[in-house]
Length: 303
Image 1 (cartoon, one colour):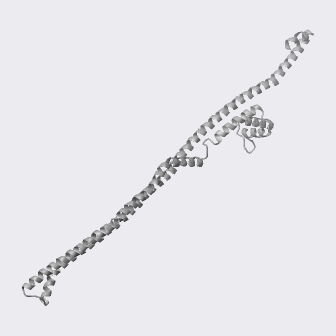
Image 2: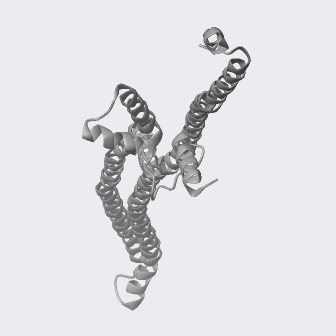
Image 3: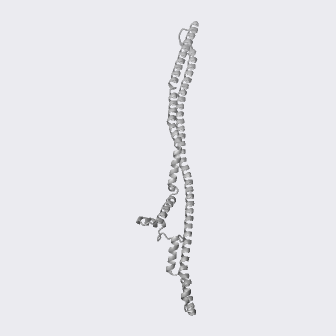
């Protein structure tokens, strides 16, 4: 095969799609038809083919409705939208938590003043009882000393002191215990208020953690769903490309068969027919030699 014939076959096979063209030197059918369209020279067949290519190109170029990043962003946004009511509900509970604990602190703090008043009254009552007890004991001791003839002096005073001291010590201990109880009561109130603050912080942290989990969960679930969607779209696109390629191969096979038939017919016309005409002329010459005029008589059978 000469270089010219080989080049002709290459071009012919490339046009039919049998040989993959080098895109550095060959434009695709889609690009070629677009160029012809821009020049305004499309015939009806080419226009139909271009419309079909535009449709398939549009469906296969972006089968998933976006890139992988676009799909991930869209699925994350969808998951965030699905989680939005729960997030909004949790966010709305934060002010409610703050208000609830503020009310509890106010109520606990309000117990401080009544407690102080109760202990103040109790201390006053204890002191009053102490004074009464000491006075009664002093009067009793004086009367007893008077009956014994003691009305003054060191022994008198010492006896009074010894009689009152136990009462004084008793009430001193009671007052001390009461003061300690008062301090413990105040400390209990302070501790309750501090505990309420810690509980509020813990509860609000739990709500914020739940919000964060929903938001981060939306991202992770969106990525997972987006990846699955992308893989599904890729499979669909691959199946579509395979179907389009099969259709293209079928068209190529049909076109090749038609071209082969045309070549066969052309070869027959170019080779067989001239040989038949040559044989007819040779036969006519032989008959002419025999009959002399057979050419005119038998020529009608070869017309």
